[in-house]
Image (tube, rainbow, N blue to C red; front, side, top):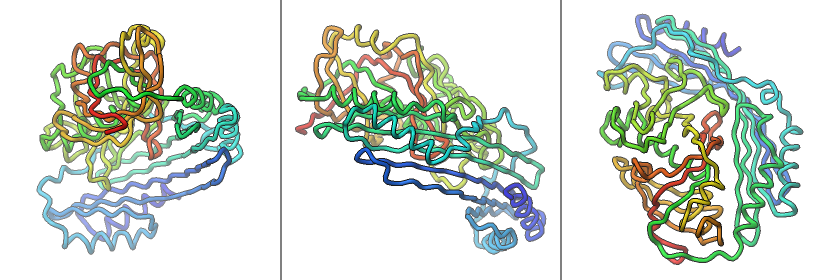
Length: 439
């Protein structure tokens, strides 16, 4: 149905607006979510949504329509009525020429065919592994089918699957968290995640408050994912870059030589293999051995920068083209080895409520969450209360400041399906904690 709908909308738009440049993208997302709280499943939802995107450029004007309506004639008429009212668009970059996919995203049959009972079994494993602690969270699965056609002859079809589990275990007002995302449902291990969350919260009893200051830190994957997500949104975003608001300087050694960051929509964490403009996506290096290699573009920002689109357009998203599946490449060490090297520092489980103060320096403020521990003489000695921090993420990863990168990158789920971030443990020379629990 969706492939036929794509063709019907294109045909109707061509008839209604002869001579126009027209592109149609139809996405079908079949998603399901099993949510639990107080260690019991309380919600199971299943959605099957078809969304049609139609964009038309004619006589110097551009309009976009995005809707769940599937009447091809009505969509074409709506776009035609909007065109005379649209402002002139001198920056229109044209539509995508015929191009083949670089590679297909992962489609996993078990994920595609997952039942509520399958997700419930993972939840049960999580709850039981928590050993009687109160638990909450979710398990989700999704399947995407995408279809693209335009009046220049570009035609793409692809599919992908996504699964994720995110849960907490609670004890005496504290939370331990465990998260994992993958294109394959079989990669989710409810028991291992439940045990991880329980072990974390049990280690948080009787925390002490430490004074603000600069501390050596070891960041666990959830905290590192926040760094990568903010890099994606405010640093490697082509719109932010072309407007001069990004820290990124392609060709410059801005980060430590140990740091390699890439965007990978066809890797094990999942993603989609072409964008809203019908541009194929593949693995793209953003930082190579500390050297900024490039930023992500859609056709409009690419035209401004004098480069080619990297396949990161989201037409209905005003934030601009950004990496959707960023990965910090793993290193050659592990958490135990990192801890053993620390004379005095902090192990941080997670960040939250992070907000950008200055995108040019990537200065952010935020809080630690779900556990932090004092390390002395190579050993974890006790839990500490949450900190507020004010820190330039770029400065924290500058040459000489990265002391170690974990050997395993762990995919962290985002709030949206097919948008996951893969991060290892990260050992940094300094982190600026500006306030404690008392203020």
